[in-house]
Length: 312
Image 1 (cartoon, helix red, strand yellow):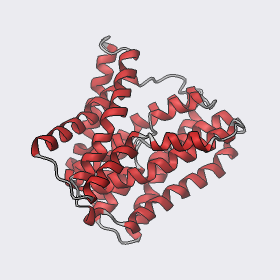
Image 2 (cartoon, rainbow, N blue to C red; image 1 turned 90 degrees about the vertical axis):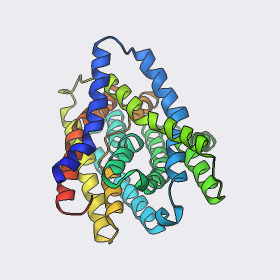
Image 3 (tube, rainbow, N blue to C red; image 1 turned 180 degrees about the vertical axis):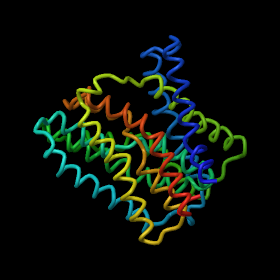
Image 4 (cartoon, helix red, strand yellow; image 1 turned 135 degrees about the vertical axis):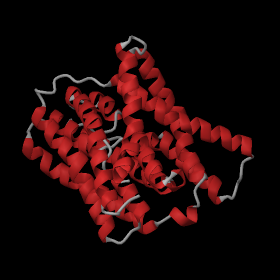
């Protein structure tokens, strides 16, 4: 059972990413096409995922302030330790920025929700969605602050606030909460459209991610990649899972913590690194390497924790 659960959690990610790699190598996906599709998925489809997960969830059952606060504290702890320790590895500020962002920012929406859905059921993704809506803005803001400070630029609070307000994940989550709290129920045909659009995100985005993977310059940055990958895929999920387990939360909460902690580095960190004078090549390597390795580490996390009876 533990083995099958592990395979079922990882196989969709593996299949879609391999499909993207095959399409890319076969000349069916160009950089321009992938950029356009990624932008459409992020801007227009991701809000439907957040909205749908919250709309179909019993808020009274998943709105757990204690759990949300726990996850926020854990995220802030990871950020604080990362900011303190990474500069000890290198004095190069551009490398520091990419390493810090690589550890802090995770591809939560694309990886965590499918894992929770497979393990605990689609109806149990509401808690993960609320955590994502709470955590993602925090680490996005702090990563911008970190990168700005490393390049010596002056922060612009107004611009920073507007980027938060316009974030598609935040818009979808807030709208879902407002509709849910207002007790609004859409007709069945509208609900079906919402669910179907949300269902496009995982396969399409993972195919695009697989098509965009580039394994190059790995040897040059091998030390940085080892540090970031081990921290991101092993140390962070271990911290999340053990903390949540010791605090007495249930199996859905532990599954959510594992899924949120074990995700690879966010793809958008590569773009942000290039725009904010961090090491863009290293940032791209971190995304590629953590994404590939995560399929193995997620499998191991699911196998071990399901064997222990902590999730499932």
